[in-house]
Amino acid sequence: MIETMLVATDGSEVAAGAERYGVALAAGLSARVVGLSVVEDRSIGGLRAGGLPVTPPPLDPLEAFLAARAEAAGRRLEGRAREKGVACSCETTRGIADDILVDRAKATDLVVLGRDGEHASFRTALPGSTVDGFLRKTSKPAIVVPAGTELAGPILLAFDGSPGSRIAARLAVELAGRLSVGIHVFVDSKDKGRSAARFDEVRRLLGSASVPVREAASTLGRPDAKIVDAAREANAGMIVMGAFGRSRIHDYFLGSNSAAVVRSSPIAVLLAR
View 1: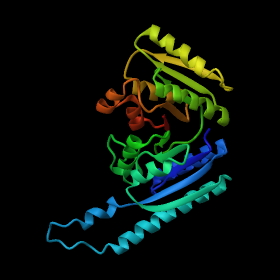
View 2: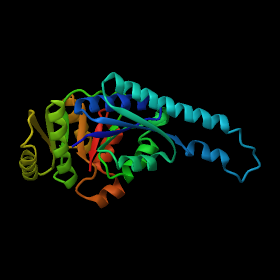
View 3: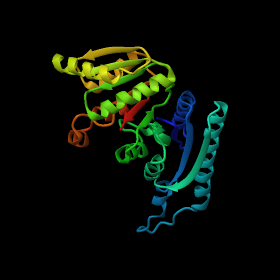
């Protein structure tokens, strides 16, 4: 049961989109929002590094600016929540952002954060460093929100028969029922027999769903690209999938489908754990 959501913000435009998405989701779920804005130690730590005969610039004004920006981001999130009638409390703190996120997430049911952060204009193929660090360390389900994403449309459930995708199926049932949206199930398998078995399994898992369920399958191409394409075709407002696939070792060394979907999807991705 999702009752409390942690929404992270750094004041950037991408974070503003995550704020809107998180507040809209909290309103639909009648959940409470806990906001978090972190003054990142790494932003100024390098300026203190010694070893060279160079005098660092005055750091007090920079630290004051970063603290003021973090507090402003929290106030903005509180204002968005107020407009939607969502209970919200915000914390501003200082430290290593991903570590603090992991710690605060322990007391919540779901985490929402923007994919690219304040350095989005410099991003190439990877999510922001804070997002990447958090996703590797957390044990909580998290929604990664790319720029321009809105909470509208059905849920695309990517199912591969792994333990993570079974958790994703249960989350999809809860979210779809409480948001009153349909579920599109996508199964990828190069073996038609295995695909049929996965559909049988996911039908059992979705048996309690009170919303329309549609099915789609594919046997050709890269799984991550096909998941994103299926979500686009369904006009989905969210992709729900397991944080890890069928092989945790494979995921760690080679990069999982979930990581690839997070990197490329124009639609918010919920990684279930």
